[in-house]
Image (cartoon, rainbow, N blue to C red; front, side, top):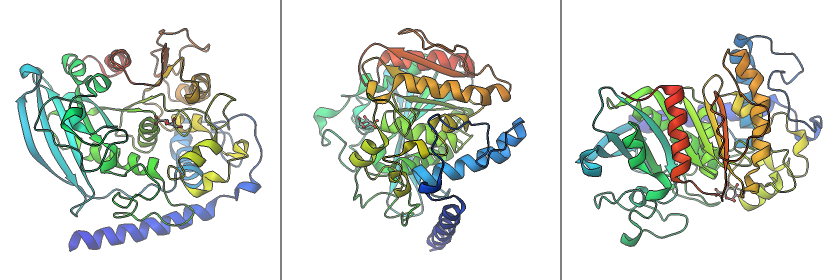
Length: 413
Ligand code: GCU
């Protein structure tokens, strides 16, 4: 009862906030047309941002409000979680790791997150962790028969014993364990199913998404990632200073949004995240346009974003500003040569534009200014790599993530 009351109050405050945020900015038709992405170091009304403090206080608040108002919708509020370890296998990967199955609840039966956490056994200290959502359900990432099927059907295949372990090569958890990192993941549908009329996600049940500023699926997933951080901060096996969010494609969009809005996430690795992620909304002829993404996936963003379909040049921010919100935390963008849809060159441009914010924060920013050759990793605080091949997440990609984490977190002990 108590929790229901609290959720009702949170939901009301959330709606009020959504309405007031909506009132703050001009309608899309009144926004100026700008061919180039807006400067992350210039306030909406034109005042230059001249100090770190001014960026952190004024510009970050303004950018967060703009992203919620014009693109993702108002992120749901933080809510109290309760968690329980349902199962632990100390002999995972031949004794190298412990696998834990944890349920994270929000005061009611559903929705809930079924988190799978795999932690290396041989370590002196709490482990740094890669955290992210998966497309196939936890059981597709490991062979352990105790990991249950997801409660709703994955994107491509219905849950079936034949699918167990089928995505081992996507998450490559053992490779991270061997390098001293933990991996925490859940099925994205636990938080919000990827469909227009989802009835069993947080947008319907927990924080009803209503009105023009109603949040879309990307914001819902980002909120879910933040609730996983809530849990990780309570787990003694995990080093809460070293939490890297990883996500592929649409889940990469959610990953960068989660990090931009939550500085407990200390590294962001959105892989091939494309439009609505790390690629500019002011795209190119080969990349996914705002109109296309809003037409194919009308549930991903807020309604206001659709007003930019034929005029993305009116956006008062672009995805360079989303990356800048992560400053000074490390952000690594990964691309693939054949994945022009996710706009590899545009993503590099977004980093180049966010660089000045990172320099203002005293970091090395993006160390190189020309688009790198294939397989050359730029591993500065703003990092980038492009590898040959298609839209996918591979063992080789994870090796780059691990090397990058070693550099910026320090090698796990
Ligand atoms: C589609 C979509 C992309 C998305 C991708 C994915 O291609 O257009 O925006 O990133 O699916 O999630 O795999």
